[in-house]
Length: 174
Image (cartoon, rainbow, N blue to C red):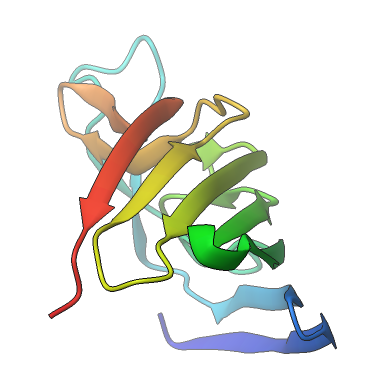
């Protein structure tokens, strides 16, 4: 590209509400567009093309830059609960939102907006010993691509992100 305009705002706020509760808020707004890119390589999606998905020259001036979502938000919180001689229980969660993005300069292949929620509970013993964490990731079971790319003669290939999943982790500090 001969030029692009990229500007935005990134805001991160953290607050300790009391001795046991923390909250984090994050926001990112991004404007990222090609100011001049008259000779970009794009994909020919014409169903009657001699070579399916062949690379062709195109002008993408004004298009969004690849993998540059306009808006991302996150909200996280954690709370520690004292269990006395039983140790402590840490409860945490995070909500993340992504407004979506294009994967290539031609702005044809797009990942739509998605949101994920992760949560976990961790027991920490009062005496030295193993911690136990029960966790859940992508609790919204959001379906989004971890990777998007167009290959000549093949089409759009995508690797889906991991679905909703749960687990148990046992850890020991040394």
